[in-house]
Length: 284
Image (cartoon, rainbow, N blue to C red):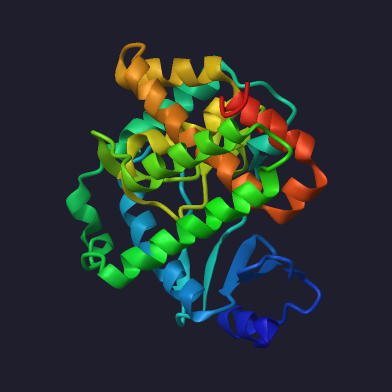
């Protein structure tokens, strides 16, 4: 597709010397023109996700006090949105402060308090078929085989068995007493920060947001700092809720599985894998 021609037609002006094209995104082609970002999905599934994400954001924006992206969909071909002037928190060499916690926790409480009937369009999936259940079971078993292949002779056998037990609980048994609308990927790269005011200015990337466990939106903070996580939970729940913390920790442990599955990380930086196995108590 001729992205530049499409944007020129939308803007009604020549932009040949006034744009930056970013082609290394896996799922999208991104063009920045002046103060507007244009994101073009590379396949049909991503195009549908783009429309769904806008539906979710239109609702979220009505309930939260921190800004979230407001997309304009153009001819069902791309989304356009204003270029954000601040930067992701992970690009700043600044600590997690009380101000950060006091910003992010009210946002999560607002997000998680949105009445679920607003997201009726997310409940369209029919009950899982037997074929789908079998496909998922095959996926889990193949993942277990890959983990054993990667870890055998490098860690004790009981560590692999610990991971297997955890996977069965995660994939087939885990449930949460609090089902809410969750962002699913609240982490530093998706938190846009105004360092001059020590304030969160935007929360971005709602692509995978959905109805699930409230604990999911706290998981990344265990990897950052357990002390910060406990402060967040205390402010969120109103007290130091150990059961909530344990559920967050349980879900946070899943990252070890994904990283073992990652060819590049596991093959080129196995010391990091060992560190993660110890941090998440699969290996002592």
